[in-house]
Image (cartoon, rainbow, N blue to C red; front, side):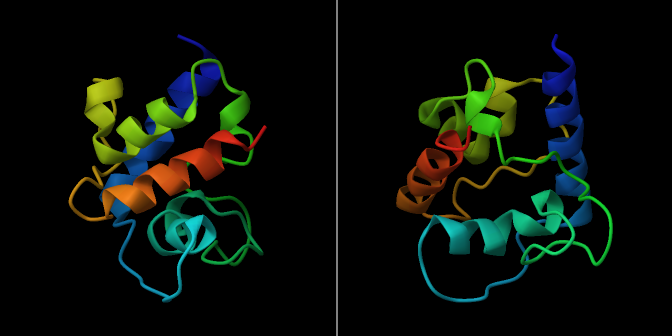
Amino acid sequence: MRRGGVALVFALALAALVGCGKSDPGGSGPQVTFNTHCAKCHAQAGQPGGPGIGGSRGPKLDKIGAEPGRNAEWIAEFIRDPKSKRGDAKMMPAFKGTIPDEQIVELANWLAAKK
């Protein structure tokens, strides 16, 4: 397994334990969805929803679309149900039923474009 993949799984698993997806700033679009459901665990210091200093608990997603196999479809399925794509994804919460599927698809397309 590639080092980045291991880090991604670990960070996403950690995100589930710390309660990602608890705030709701309002608005719409993939950036708002990210800020609402992902930033607590994946944003960096200085970014909306990120920590005051240092890095986030989850992996940086600013270039996730450049990782092999990380297309919009894969990312959307991972967001819906992480264990469906990676059996060892223990800390990333499943967002199926929490985030409307249209928003998951929009978010996945947005993330996949990050290269």
